[in-house]
Length: 429
Image 1 (cartoon, rainbow, N blue to C red):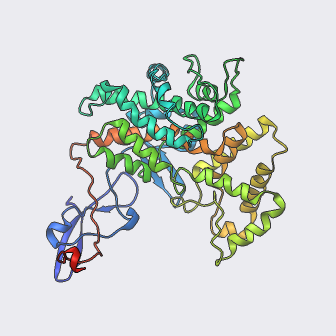
Image 2: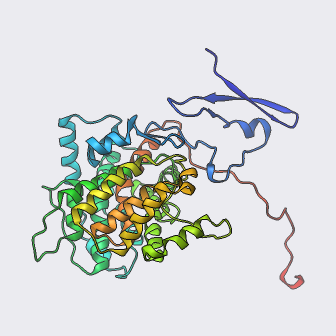
Image 3: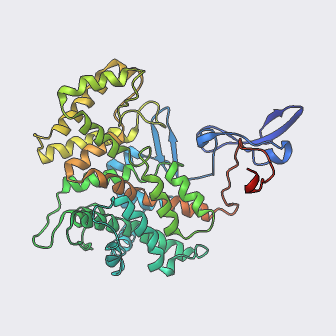
């Protein structure tokens, strides 16, 4: 069967461009030769209609609320598996056997410690530094400590870097939290699972024994699974763009963390909690709902709706269940912020204004409430997102590096500045 093409007509010039089809999802027009044949570029701010790469890792159907990792629905992975199993799947393309899973867990667990000199590195930060600022610096600095995994042309070094990234970012995030609150660092323990280890590093103190709550550990593990990868979002695109230059993997992930920090991206759940604090009490909700419905008021309810998911966020359904499991386990009754969140949830699920516009509570809404109930401050929310997303970034980076036709990223622009003009000596201006 002959390849399909699409016709571009620009002025008097018509050119045929190949149309490519993925396994699922919309077709794409390959415009790689458009400039050579017509002398024109395309203009697509935000890349809303542009596929920047070919990938086998994650697929999203926003209209129908579908999120697949290597073909597996996110609901099944979160319900039946754990985070490290999802990590293995994203990295290697298949679910692990029992033997492969045990080996992978072993390797990740025994890479969780960081170089002892990293402890001194932290003293250069102010105590009130945002954990994301600390994480950007520390992850980028890993390249200064682990020279044996920065050669991107070596498959073994790429594998070691991948293991280290998944294992060490939780340790660094926990250290950032401990440093911020003035408590001593807690070393990881090899007999704990991934989520339990992270909880202990964050909340244990040397003067007493810490017992991990299995309900909270399972909830955190689900949060990690739900945020593990999300296709070509802003931070993942940043990692790929940085990686296309040949930069070492630690620098690429640090770039991704910096992009994730933005309030329109990974900082959304933190902004959502700040909105709940602004509302303050259940009695004040009606006036904020009225503001949200007023077209002339710039106020927006954060944590509702999603840029990609036009119907519902499949992760939110899982997070809704997990959130209520945590609240029930902790028996929290006298928290005005959670009272506001629960009432907002009730309104959003029953108010026709929200239902008609499909403004359902999204994953950021529920994860923010859950993390607060577990004892994390809002400044740590995005850092936890970075912990979860580290595997997605690494998987996408690894896929890009191993692509034989990979090129350095170089977006074009529509220039609207001054045309060429002559320099005027300073005395004549």
